[in-house]
Length: 269
Image 1 (tube, rainbow, N blue to C red):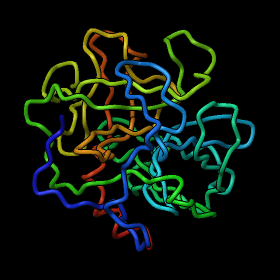
Image 2 (cartoon, one colour; image 1 turned 180 degrees about the vertical axis):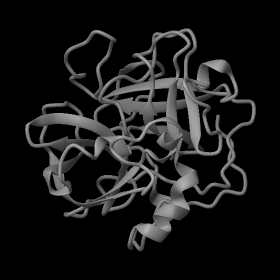
Image 3 (cartoon, rainbow, N blue to C red; image 1 turned 90 degrees about the vertical axis):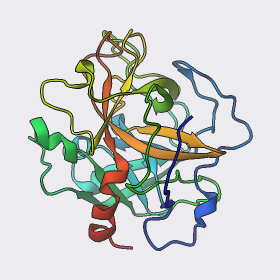
């Protein structure tokens, strides 16, 4: 279980009629599954598929407001903002349910399409939607500010989602939305300190050191989530990993709480 201390809910970063106590709830249809497997259809209403013309799926992301979604910054450089679409309520990758064009993309100025090394800590993007989403039908996920403290013992269960490839040599995306329960790892261990030092205040390390479970191509931008009570909180965004579920190769996630103040200042309400 993830513990929260001195928590301030920020399920609505921007001016919104959404009541904060309504974020992060799953529908009653949920069957909770541990391990990499198909999610129950409709069980993660805030999950988005980021697409563009000719591409059935590029990256994942999370709905945080009727007008905004979060994804990884490196997912947003291939096309103009108006060429992207955010699909909501998708379970099977070939579905074209509710979607909205993107009108604007907000990225940190220190992150560019050629960013490498330590600047990867800014690998996030806010997508502004042309058509607001009905949040009564598609419940956004809760956010928490940077004072949220995760269980200091680590080894805590967290969940991530995606339609990415399911093995190192796969050539097709997952047909249905997949969910996986992994462990939040102590960032000081060698497996989390990859080709450059992980920034513990801005990034999270999660996975299984034994391998067999993890993120893969096209899972980028997807949510890393923790539950407290009956509500789910967005704690991270899938940023990068080496390989797909390989031993001693966990995934590095952006720590969402560290960037909320930047979003408050730079993304209009």
